[in-house]
Length: 146
Image (tube, rainbow, N blue to C red; front, side, top):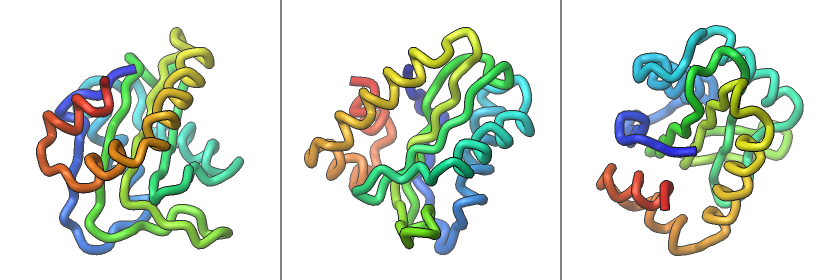
């Protein structure tokens, strides 16, 4: 699954909520033509978050939604200025968010494969350092897609 430049957000806003981040990235997905149905996609993401928060450690969140509401599978990326409370039960905050949109035709296999690939990258300290500090969108896209 790929990420494209128009789906990378480097935010300087001071205080964003988890809900604002999810809606902002979903809007980017819609505007870029990756969603069939914005509301259905949001519902899919929120249903997944109800099961368990999608924090993966290292200040990173991996929210994801899937289904017929997604035209084409893709990853959106956002880095925020100030940490966002993502997991209320664990008081876990994130500064980096990868939001997956998985189409129905790509299904569970691509979804799982993408989560595994991103998880491997997240474990790499140099990868985390670069995505946390780079202001070059092309570099971020290249790091994620490599």
